[in-house]
Image (cartoon, rainbow, N blue to C red; front, top):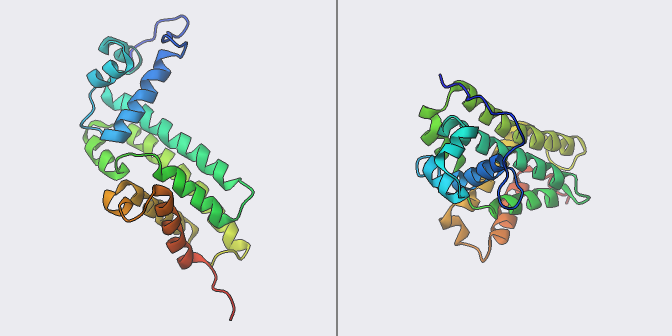
Length: 207
Protein backbone atom coordinates (compact mmCIF):
# COMPACT_ATOMS: atom_id res chain seq x y z
CA UNK A 1 0.00 0.00 0.00
CA UNK A 2 1.44 3.35 -1.07
CA UNK A 3 1.80 6.02 1.58
CA UNK A 4 1.88 9.70 0.80
CA UNK A 5 5.26 11.33 0.70
CA UNK A 6 5.88 13.92 3.42
CA UNK A 7 5.40 17.46 2.16
CA UNK A 8 8.14 19.97 2.75
CA UNK A 9 7.08 22.98 4.84
CA UNK A 10 6.71 26.40 3.30
CA UNK A 11 4.48 28.27 0.89
CA UNK A 12 2.89 26.33 -1.99
CA UNK A 13 4.86 26.56 -5.21
CA UNK A 14 3.26 28.69 -7.94
CA UNK A 15 3.31 28.65 -11.72
CA UNK A 16 4.15 31.69 -13.87
CA UNK A 17 0.62 33.05 -13.38
CA UNK A 18 0.64 32.77 -9.62
CA UNK A 19 -1.54 29.64 -9.50
CA UNK A 20 -0.45 26.94 -7.01
CA UNK A 21 1.28 24.15 -8.93
CA UNK A 22 -0.83 21.49 -7.25
CA UNK A 23 -3.95 23.22 -8.60
CA UNK A 24 -2.44 23.39 -12.08
CA UNK A 25 -1.51 19.70 -11.94
CA UNK A 26 -4.87 18.39 -10.75
CA UNK A 27 -6.85 20.60 -13.15
CA UNK A 28 -4.68 19.61 -16.10
CA UNK A 29 -4.89 15.94 -15.13
CA UNK A 30 -8.67 16.19 -14.82
CA UNK A 31 -8.99 17.62 -18.32
CA UNK A 32 -6.68 15.01 -19.84
CA UNK A 33 -8.24 12.03 -18.08
CA UNK A 34 -11.77 13.17 -18.96
CA UNK A 35 -10.85 13.71 -22.61
CA UNK A 36 -8.75 10.58 -23.20
CA UNK A 37 -9.43 8.12 -20.37
CA UNK A 38 -7.18 6.53 -17.77
CA UNK A 39 -4.93 4.25 -19.83
CA UNK A 40 -3.99 6.81 -22.49
CA UNK A 41 -2.63 9.32 -19.99
CA UNK A 42 0.68 8.95 -18.15
CA UNK A 43 2.25 11.09 -15.45
CA UNK A 44 4.89 12.05 -17.98
CA UNK A 45 2.23 13.44 -20.34
CA UNK A 46 0.60 15.36 -17.50
CA UNK A 47 3.97 16.78 -16.43
CA UNK A 48 4.68 17.89 -20.00
CA UNK A 49 1.26 19.57 -20.29
CA UNK A 50 1.90 21.40 -17.00
CA UNK A 51 5.44 22.38 -18.05
CA UNK A 52 6.89 20.72 -14.94
CA UNK A 53 9.05 17.68 -14.30
CA UNK A 54 7.67 14.28 -13.39
CA UNK A 55 9.39 14.70 -10.02
CA UNK A 56 7.15 17.71 -9.40
CA UNK A 57 4.08 15.50 -9.92
CA UNK A 58 5.48 13.05 -7.35
CA UNK A 59 5.99 15.91 -4.90
CA UNK A 60 2.20 16.15 -4.61
CA UNK A 61 0.95 12.71 -5.68
CA UNK A 62 2.66 9.42 -4.93
CA UNK A 63 1.33 7.66 -8.04
CA UNK A 64 -1.03 7.90 -11.00
CA UNK A 65 -3.95 6.39 -9.08
CA UNK A 66 -3.73 9.06 -6.39
CA UNK A 67 -3.68 11.87 -8.95
CA UNK A 68 -6.49 10.27 -10.96
CA UNK A 69 -8.66 10.03 -7.84
CA UNK A 70 -8.05 13.67 -6.91
CA UNK A 71 -8.74 14.79 -10.48
CA UNK A 72 -11.99 12.84 -10.95
CA UNK A 73 -13.31 13.81 -7.52
CA UNK A 74 -12.65 17.46 -8.38
CA UNK A 75 -14.57 17.07 -11.67
CA UNK A 76 -17.51 15.48 -9.88
CA UNK A 77 -17.53 18.09 -7.12
CA UNK A 78 -17.56 20.83 -9.74
CA UNK A 79 -20.39 18.98 -11.49
CA UNK A 80 -22.33 18.89 -8.22
CA UNK A 81 -21.84 22.63 -7.73
CA UNK A 82 -23.06 23.58 -11.21
CA UNK A 83 -25.96 21.12 -11.04
CA UNK A 84 -27.04 22.78 -7.81
CA UNK A 85 -26.77 26.24 -9.38
CA UNK A 86 -29.01 25.19 -12.27
CA UNK A 87 -31.54 23.68 -9.86
CA UNK A 88 -31.67 26.93 -7.89
CA UNK A 89 -32.39 29.02 -10.99
CA UNK A 90 -35.83 30.75 -10.97
CA UNK A 91 -37.20 28.79 -13.93
CA UNK A 92 -39.40 25.71 -14.34
CA UNK A 93 -38.07 22.29 -13.33
CA UNK A 94 -38.01 21.20 -16.97
CA UNK A 95 -35.95 24.25 -17.88
CA UNK A 96 -33.58 23.48 -15.00
CA UNK A 97 -33.09 19.95 -16.37
CA UNK A 98 -32.48 21.36 -19.85
CA UNK A 99 -29.80 23.70 -18.51
CA UNK A 100 -28.10 20.79 -16.72
CA UNK A 101 -28.21 18.66 -19.87
CA UNK A 102 -26.80 21.44 -22.07
CA UNK A 103 -24.01 22.13 -19.58
CA UNK A 104 -22.98 18.48 -19.34
CA UNK A 105 -23.19 17.79 -23.08
CA UNK A 106 -21.02 20.78 -23.95
CA UNK A 107 -18.20 19.27 -21.90
CA UNK A 108 -16.59 16.66 -24.11
CA UNK A 109 -15.37 13.67 -22.10
CA UNK A 110 -15.07 9.90 -22.18
CA UNK A 111 -17.71 7.60 -20.76
CA UNK A 112 -17.32 7.58 -16.96
CA UNK A 113 -17.94 3.86 -16.54
CA UNK A 114 -15.48 2.96 -19.29
CA UNK A 115 -12.82 5.12 -17.66
CA UNK A 116 -13.49 3.61 -14.24
CA UNK A 117 -13.14 0.08 -15.63
CA UNK A 118 -9.77 1.06 -17.09
CA UNK A 119 -8.61 2.46 -13.75
CA UNK A 120 -10.15 -0.08 -11.37
CA UNK A 121 -7.18 -2.46 -11.25
CA UNK A 122 -4.88 0.34 -10.07
CA UNK A 123 -7.22 2.04 -7.62
CA UNK A 124 -7.46 1.11 -3.96
CA UNK A 125 -10.81 0.37 -2.35
CA UNK A 126 -10.65 3.74 -0.60
CA UNK A 127 -9.93 5.58 -3.86
CA UNK A 128 -12.82 3.85 -5.63
CA UNK A 129 -15.10 4.73 -2.74
CA UNK A 130 -14.09 8.41 -2.85
CA UNK A 131 -14.97 8.62 -6.54
CA UNK A 132 -18.24 6.71 -6.18
CA UNK A 133 -19.30 8.88 -3.24
CA UNK A 134 -18.64 12.07 -5.20
CA UNK A 135 -20.67 10.64 -8.09
CA UNK A 136 -23.50 9.60 -5.75
CA UNK A 137 -23.69 13.11 -4.29
CA UNK A 138 -24.81 14.35 -7.72
CA UNK A 139 -27.49 11.64 -7.94
CA UNK A 140 -28.62 12.46 -4.39
CA UNK A 141 -28.99 16.12 -5.35
CA UNK A 142 -31.01 15.33 -8.47
CA UNK A 143 -33.17 12.84 -6.57
CA UNK A 144 -33.94 15.51 -3.95
CA UNK A 145 -35.34 17.81 -6.62
CA UNK A 146 -37.24 15.03 -8.36
CA UNK A 147 -38.81 14.22 -4.99
CA UNK A 148 -39.75 17.88 -4.48
CA UNK A 149 -41.32 18.03 -7.94
CA UNK A 150 -43.30 14.86 -7.24
CA UNK A 151 -44.58 16.39 -4.03
CA UNK A 152 -45.60 19.56 -5.86
CA UNK A 153 -47.50 17.59 -8.47
CA UNK A 154 -45.18 18.74 -11.25
CA UNK A 155 -44.20 15.22 -12.28
CA UNK A 156 -45.80 11.84 -11.72
CA UNK A 157 -45.10 9.76 -8.62
CA UNK A 158 -42.16 7.38 -8.89
CA UNK A 159 -38.75 6.45 -7.53
CA UNK A 160 -36.83 9.74 -7.40
CA UNK A 161 -33.42 8.07 -7.29
CA UNK A 162 -34.28 5.96 -10.35
CA UNK A 163 -35.28 9.16 -12.14
CA UNK A 164 -31.95 10.74 -11.21
CA UNK A 165 -29.99 7.80 -12.60
CA UNK A 166 -32.14 7.62 -15.75
CA UNK A 167 -31.70 11.33 -16.42
CA UNK A 168 -27.92 11.11 -15.92
CA UNK A 169 -27.71 8.13 -18.28
CA UNK A 170 -29.65 9.93 -21.02
CA UNK A 171 -27.45 13.00 -20.71
CA UNK A 172 -24.44 10.78 -21.45
CA UNK A 173 -25.75 10.54 -25.03
CA UNK A 174 -23.89 13.80 -25.53
CA UNK A 175 -20.67 11.76 -25.61
CA UNK A 176 -21.85 9.57 -28.49
CA UNK A 177 -21.02 10.86 -31.97
CA UNK A 178 -23.90 8.87 -33.45
CA UNK A 179 -26.36 10.79 -31.26
CA UNK A 180 -24.69 14.20 -31.70
CA UNK A 181 -24.80 13.84 -35.49
CA UNK A 182 -28.60 13.65 -35.40
CA UNK A 183 -28.86 17.31 -34.38
CA UNK A 184 -27.37 20.60 -35.49
CA UNK A 185 -25.90 21.27 -32.05
CA UNK A 186 -25.45 19.68 -28.64
CA UNK A 187 -27.96 22.18 -27.29
CA UNK A 188 -30.60 20.81 -29.64
CA UNK A 189 -29.66 17.27 -28.63
CA UNK A 190 -29.95 18.22 -24.94
CA UNK A 191 -33.37 19.73 -25.49
CA UNK A 192 -34.55 16.64 -27.39
CA UNK A 193 -33.27 14.32 -24.65
CA UNK A 194 -35.01 16.31 -21.92
CA UNK A 195 -38.23 16.47 -23.98
CA UNK A 196 -38.20 12.68 -24.31
CA UNK A 197 -37.39 12.21 -20.62
CA UNK A 198 -40.03 14.74 -19.59
CA UNK A 199 -42.73 12.98 -21.61
CA UNK A 200 -42.14 9.93 -19.43
CA UNK A 201 -42.27 11.66 -16.03
CA UNK A 202 -44.72 14.51 -16.60
CA UNK A 203 -48.36 14.30 -15.55
CA UNK A 204 -50.63 14.17 -18.63
CA UNK A 205 -52.89 17.20 -19.02
CA UNK A 206 -56.60 16.65 -18.55
CA UNK A 207 -58.68 16.41 -21.62
